[in-house]
Image 1 (cartoon, rainbow, N blue to C red):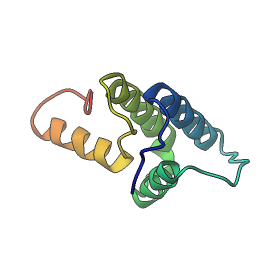
Image 2 (cartoon, rainbow, N blue to C red; image 1 turned 45 degrees about the vertical axis):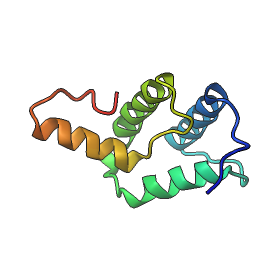
Image 3 (cartoon, rainbow, N blue to C red; image 1 turned 30 degrees about the horizontal axis):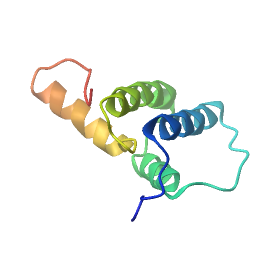
Length: 100
């Protein structure tokens, strides 16, 4: 997919934070999404998070995306990428600050 018309990373991060807050509140009140938001939503859905851990996982994911984008990324990493990084860090004996 081409993202040449993508706004700067600060704007994308603000849009991402809004999307996550809507998910955390459980009230998605819009029906128009940017292509990358749809990718993020589909990826979150495909991760099959347990309801018990979903809010905490999404908050940790949000913080990881903020760090990721502060380092210059143009788009947020996907939840599946974040979870893989956490799993790999744990397997390697690292801390939980994956994808930072």
